[in-house]
Length: 296
Image 1 (cartoon, helix red, strand yellow):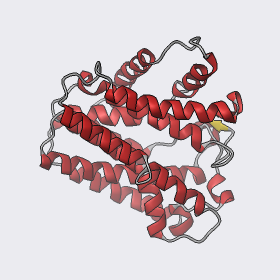
Image 2 (cartoon, rainbow, N blue to C red):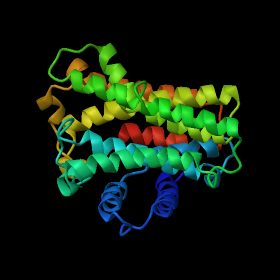
Image 3 (cartoon, rainbow, N blue to C red):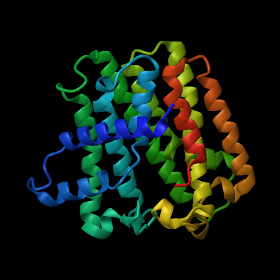
């Protein structure tokens, strides 16, 4: 399967759908729409919406069935990046090779841009013109699952522990908690969303959620490794920052080589989880390999 071709085709469609979701950037008050668009279209890889789409397609679903959920997931992801970069959290100057949102628009507007993206995601998921073929029960379950992955049981809880663990001795339980929530929860919610909207059976959903949990943890471990070994020009942000801030990461606990071995284990486990799926799940298999092998 040609992952690059699949990726570019679906990314273009997601980008267009995101453009259509938002008012023009000159809409009053223009600065908030400019700030939102600045980060939303800053060159993101669209991994979460693409995992949502690929999960649906693995069950015979289609892009059109899940596009609204895919866009909402990318809005939530972008909100989290804007807030993570703020001086009160990671205090990063660059993201994806350009200045972070608060460096361009100020901390006040950056906070509000993140708030607006998170709110708009749920506005989109609940809009009567979106997900029109989906039952109220499925829509409610979708909103519940995504909000849980976004809140204190998910990204917020993971971020809290990430901040509180800086400069302190952490064990593997703490690191796993941070990784599985700060990063893994939304990746799992992305796969869940596509599967739920495509009508997954309980057995199919269990397999896909197992796959997603392994992929989500692998994604963050790979980020940990790239922060040590990656090239700043490829990554688009500073390297070595985890160590300088005393962050709780896999390399800081077990070293680079053990972290790489764990990555390979997670890849094998994720592929095994969906081994019963046919070739329609090949994009999911390729995404798992990409997440482990990427260099940015």
